[in-house]
Length: 413
Image 1 (tube, rainbow, N blue to C red):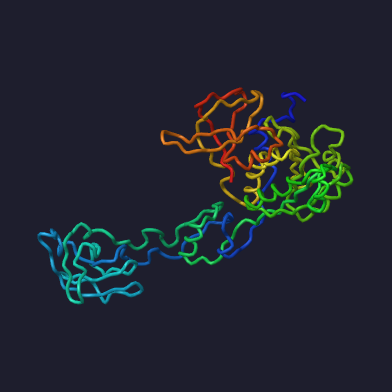
Image 2: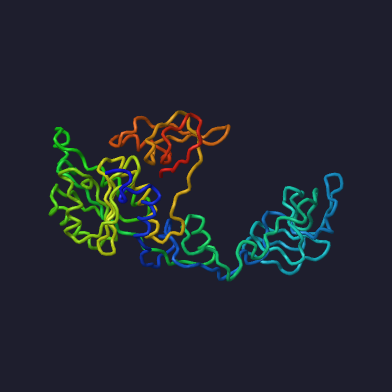
């Protein structure tokens, strides 16, 4: 099939087509302890100001600037201590002129204070007095009411991924539960008479079969992308066997199938999907590795058919399916942030394809990170994927990147 065939899509067209054929799932309410990595389904507003009161950023003494102005080691200023405010306590009243209030970090500062002089700029004070040796803090170190969050404002927007810091913000503002997108359930199906699982490991050791690495690698990628993998097993090279496995995935939101979608005599996935009434969307992309990738719609569920070569399956997941999983889970940002790097060596490609090269990423002291190939780039060399920190993207139309060329890199988890 030639590059001009309408079903042989360019990289971005193929990715957009996959994204257009999946939709956010319904939402659910979860405890914030279980919300890490999930996507908010609705805006979250704060019911309170934070901080709820003016509070001290330092252990020290709350003062009025006029009372300590000019204090230095040569000209110290001594003031009586009029209050002692521990963390968890409150001032006894406004700060009286000509006095200082001892205050701990996080404790409320009394009305009238212009700043908190850290204890290091004093003699440490006693129960009755304190001597100031610097005045540079006398208008600093007060965290004002609401300077972080104001009551009623949106603190986290719908579509936001809940990071550890975001979960901290939820707890800070009293949100014990949040509404998030449901984790997609994705069936994972391997295909081929030559593939076996651990129960037939002896046949692998005897050189008569190969292990089913794709299902486990893809399940790990799914877990990392926020989905639940449902291992459907291995289908024999027979359309009926494929149909049976796909039909068993009725509770899945989508199915990933590996192998059996190329043009060989024993590639039965397309036949099985046709028999199930699936609607074909496209079946090839102008990329390497991973060109024989297909999208079929089984009613409203995507069936993503990936190549059988282990590297091709993992690469196509990263560039096509991870964004799709994020969309299904309700994330606002679907596409990864690329790193701008430079090549340490020349990198060859096929001009009519977008090439994704497995590379290591090393920081450089004199500019962008430098990338190097992990070794041979064959699509069956899975160890090269395990060594890779990212995928260097050689765009369609480029046959070679010279050494020290700029290149965009898709970071790998």
